[in-house]
Length: 120
Image (cartoon, rainbow, N blue to C red; front, side, top):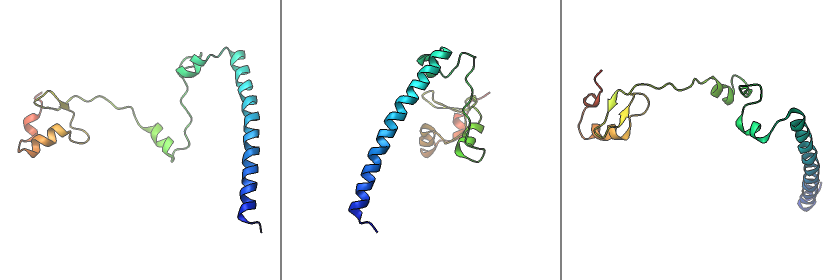
């Protein structure tokens, strides 16, 4: 069995080899990408904008229905809800989610939440 110094030496050698291989593969991959970009007329702006020349951007594939990415993809876009409460300084709250600080403070001072309800 090798001792710690031998193993650390081997690790150092392997990391150096991995770096060299990565550098070679990186250059090769960049050249392939540039060739495809030129063939299809793709610009950096096309890549940054998220849209291809064909119109709308395609959604990213998710990891699966049970994974975190799958759950995020299933979430619906947040809809705008009309405010139901208005504070003394014009602050508003839809009544969804956590109670805002301005309303919590007023309730703690003895005011009622219903006092701030917006009359329809």
